Length: 350
Image (cartoon, rainbow, N blue to C red; front, side, top):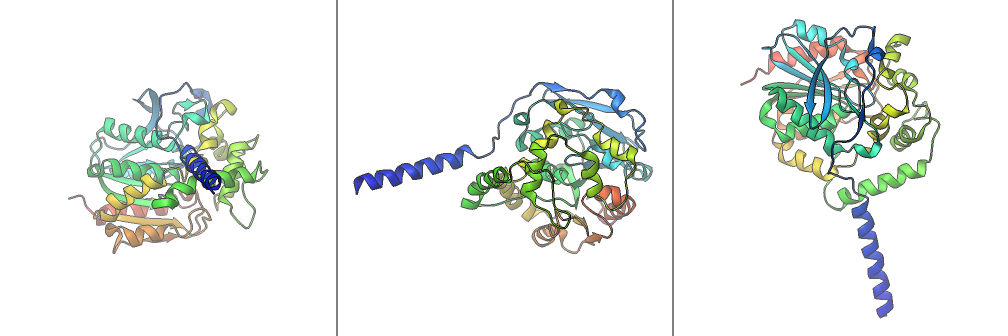
């Protein structure tokens, strides 16, 4: 009996240890990087913007800063595997409307520095870097627009310093969160599910979307096919030049650590995200608007938690954008601009 008890105890200790070990890291340090040669960005269609750079914790971050310097700031944050090029159709009309439009490239993407290894990246690192970026620019009364990882990171930046932000508009994004035992078990089980996917040749089936397959594909596929991925994630036909624009920051595998590892990080801070939800967003009285695409299998239904949980979402003109897939900025940029300008006009800063 005593030996059985000891055996059960050892198994329990080993299980708990494995769960703890398989949690995502929250510590990080500045790593060795590469920078995409400037000639890769020459003659990109509809991307005439002057580059700006900020040094943030040892990384050079590129950002677009258009419109009057004293205009109310709009922060546009992209996701994976896109970059500020995604906002090229939204930036000019927002700037022309009198707003200061800021669109950074996350570290690992676009014209920003690119750490060499997948292990150089973790969720907390990107939250910290974008928080410091906003602090450096000393932005106030910010209107935030986030899509994909732009929301996962940007919402945590807002939670870090909510007084800087006047309103939030979310599109095809979310903040994966969980409490208790589920929060501890989810990421190890997710990692196991990704491992079981092996090395898939396709990132999804034509009529269905498997997130774990997408994650496994992104981490392991020899040829990360930007062109097929972006065309499959939009409803309009992108030109060959536009598709090449999305691949431009990544000349070869040396530059690919961030696009490959970001999907793997999605459920890596469930407990921390839950804290942000409970402490900040369940008490967020300032305006929050959702505008999700009607043809995005990745985030379908994700707007409901914001509409039902956030006090500032109550009574807002939430919109389902028709004819819009995951990269909604490509499919319906004009409508997003109209919604954003109206949202700001109808919810003036205090």
